[in-house]
Amino acid sequence: MHEPSGLTELVTAAAQGDPEAWNAIVERFSSLLWSVGRAHRLSMDDAADVVQNTWLRLLDNLHRIEQPEALPGWLATTARHECLSLLRRRGRDVLVRDDDLGPMLVDVESAALDASLLEKERDVQLWSCFSRLSERCQRLLRVLMVCDRPNYAEVSASLGMPVGSIGPTRMRCLSTLRSLVSDTGYAFESGGGRPS
Amino acid sequence: MTTHDLHPDDIELLEQLGSIVAVLDPVPPDVVELGRAAFALHHADTALMKLASEAMSAALRVTDSARGTSRLLVFEHGSVSIELDVTWRGDFGRILGVVTDESGTLAEGAHVILETRSLTRTVDLEDERFSFERVPLGLARIVLERAGERVMATTWFDVG
Image (cartoon, rainbow over all chains, first blue to last red; front, side, top):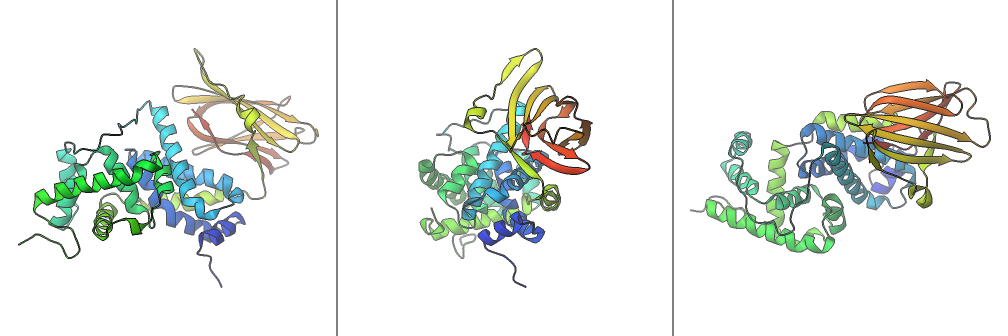
């Protein structure tokens, strides 16, 4: 039996009541929704609420989706709105300055706890450097990590970041990360490792 | 942007970061399972009432007062409309509703169900009106039921 795998087929099948198609959509995009929630600095419980609310919104709109290929962007936008709605209810402010791209101080205890879960010293160093990036950079790279084929519209939708600023911001964030990495003595390019 | 715009070293760097995040902060399995289970809340046979269009959306009002903050929502499907006054203060909200059915066939003997992420409550529709108190903040929807069958449901809306 033919199993739908393309986005158009999956959305059509799910709208017609096929639970397997729905499950495939959930499995494919949960990491994107989770990353949007976590990129907004939500706790695990709140991020879980954002993911679930986004699925409920999608269920309301399944039969109305005319361009299934735009689904990732729609999901990212909806998840972001859910994040902002939740933060508003919590009375929290999420504004981040556009020029806030420089390294920041690390939460030492949190970084140490994270590092204890990583087996490779190289990964520990990379994560330590990532943790020193500005919140804005961490948010952007966090979403870029989970996009199989990242596009500006999707990332913009996830973070509410103007499309035109994503490319330059990404370059500056990666440049800062590379600079931090180079200070550790590790190399992360292909075949990289600790230089002799 | 496509991955072609990224330098191969940057792609690899992001992939390495992604593999680290997969260890440190993976999507919890129960979150994925809840997402799968959400499909059970999808009732394809139930007519979905839509939040009324532009003109009605303009009627949305938000006021701060001693009784809390409120929002007026109007949902419609065919000859049936539901007007909701959603008020919240602190951790709970209140929903007052009026059902208008121009055909006159729905309101007779109908029940109104409130569904949230954590609870389901049912009340009788009395003189086209209903109310729900102490509604938890978050997503909610209203379902109209008659003779044990779900006839119509609003889309999910925010309380709070």
